[in-house]
Image 1 (cartoon, rainbow, N blue to C red):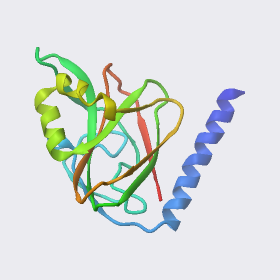
Image 2: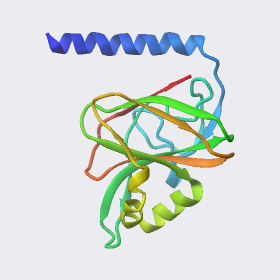
Image 3: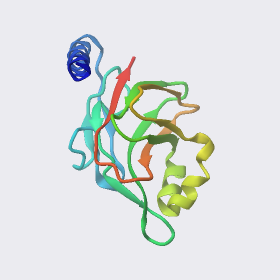
Length: 173
């Protein structure tokens, strides 16, 4: 019984998303994932490129996976992640619903310089960002962020444990 309610809710959500896509204004944002990949789709991977998010929001639309590894000082993987660049104007708002059906996923939004330091410093640098980190799991949360100034920002999604499932992101206007 619960399974059929969940399936119905999921199908309804997909249908609503499709109808909203026809009603909302669309703009193209250049979104490039680190390490040469963008993962704004169910399969991840691929080279950087343009995709069309709803309402001009530079967030992944639909679902994506954590398809990159962050190494610690010992060279071993300490986090699994994916990231998306947000080219934002000062005061520009970004809003989306986030969830995943299984594990807790963490995220933070940082400047490109901080992200580059994070990639070089690994998980020891990540622990220094703990006050800026948000989390979500099977309960939907709303990401609501406003760019403090014009520039290139990076939204960094990660898990400390391996996770190959989908992460859902539905941008809102």
